[in-house]
Length: 101
Image (cartoon, rainbow, N blue to C red; front, side, top):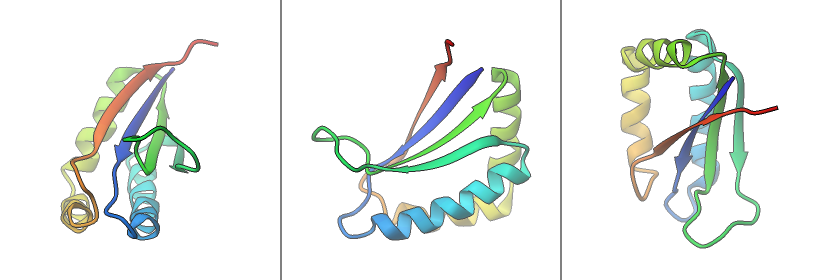
């Protein structure tokens, strides 16, 4: 099992708007077959940490990559990306973790 996280550093005062946009992303990811999708809002973190995290699980890397390709090829995602860029202080970063139980 893998967990993919995208880290979002928001423009001050825009975190709520980013969260609303991430809810739209959650629906797009689910439509592409994504599961266990979560949106996390930083409550307390070290300096420089992301303000919001978008997380999804995948059984293997092949599945995750297929879902990402399907999502990023859509016009809806392209429009979403343009809207998000003005709300962020830097490009989102992706992290992929192996889940050990």
